[in-house]
Image (cartoon, rainbow, N blue to C red):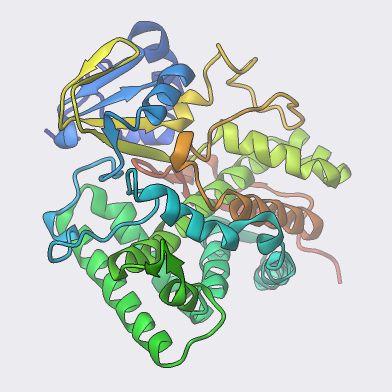
Length: 403
């Protein structure tokens, strides 16, 4: 069953690709928390969806019964297994492999390592803004938010930043459009696989100081990093590092364009931006991950059978009134904010420091250069959903600065 049929009962037949749900999922989650904290559907291969903070954290922590082998919200094509050696990243690995492989990647995303890219990110944002500031309008989703993460990821990987548009097209194909169309997913998945095979071959001939060469020459438990792990984590960098942060920056700008009081306050108090970023992450968390039941188990008392898929809806968890006061209200100076926008448990996002830095810089530079802006047409804004939710078309208008 797919989204061609309307949803009559969200507790027993939800559809994460329903257009109205993608546009505004929060009322559905609010209803489900009180009615059925773990919803179920047969659509898109079937899945369960816990909606409370406690249930989502419980599922994320249950590594004994819920596997990360398949983290996609819809079943992945069989061809994603590569000649018996499954391409594996740190978000799709289970114990005992997960811990040493994650430890291998963490130095590249430690706070000090990420700070090396702050000035580069500032220069990038300023350059992007100069490209449209005299027009008095911009599609902030496409021409700003979308442009930042692929170029920063390119810098970390040591690949050509001018391929940013290609990267985002590939990521959209694999992680957005491809979730409901296996042919599109396989097409762009193959492009990404071949791209990194070529880049790996280049680094084997001419090593550099960037992440690809690091993984090729790193020591993992006394041996080389297996090639399917190298390829998996490089693919993860491209796919997860672009769409999630693009969506988060876009959601923050959407909020500021539609809430002038918050925009004005951040212009007046730029030191508040890091706190506001945490609130944007909570209120507009972009990512839903999945797990596969490796054994029969329960989530919040709901039985889940072996082989069934569980969706970890971090966005739903982050609006749970049992944990967050006035959860539906965006409070940019919220002090108590232990959100799980970056996930929970051993698979918590390794790139969280990088994402925070990019969001802080993107918002700060936009506000500094364009302090007044608003939605050009609120009804024209479009959203992507499913695995990652965020604005795609985001028309913003603003006064042209006087020269």
